[in-house]
Image (cartoon, rainbow, N blue to C red; front, side, top):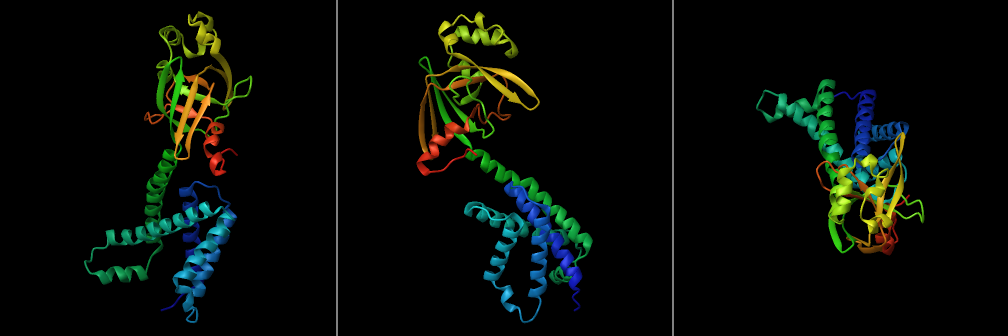
Length: 308
């Protein structure tokens, strides 16, 4: 058997680059192309060196795991212990799925029933089989694995909350929105964005009639038409800056907010609730967006923070 070092190195650089890029995508972190290529080249050199008869130690589990860790550090730099473990786990999952996809592609198209035929095919992999197998594996990783990771992260950002106002209580699911930068103009208090449907369960008939009789863009203009003077005394106008636009949100001060999570329960008085006329979640999973400053109170006990 003849081994062409240049071919082995090129194939390994290409495959390692694909694996590292997919690893970054599944975890959801940014990366630098030159670091990916450098790490892929380091991995290719390791494969070449491991082919030498005197380098039997390079085939041990300890060396392989150490080399995987080196590739992660070269590709993504120094990370936290948690992120490093996540990257390493994702690296192996991606590598196994990608390798299995290439074998699966060969098995799917072979017409011979003998097992040794597949073994012969594996020792004579063509560029075509590697390409199509890699495309199949990439599709599985991007379409399934990343969605699973994103879904898990999404569920971790959901909190059960209770809003109290004027003797009424609304229990709902809220999502942490790290991009929520809404604050009151006076006092700079964090604002919780809640859907109109949920808010109406807290308000009396006069306020509900006002909200439904006017379009959302006319709430502030016709605010004096509302007959509930108590509610009017609690209303506030919240400046809102969107992408390429500026607007105002109608909000009011509630009596109390309870937020529950595994870290504990936080009880906040005098919380400002902004009313959103649309749907915050397409599937109805949550009906409010929590301000990160509120959630930080839950994690102060553990010395952690989610605010940048």
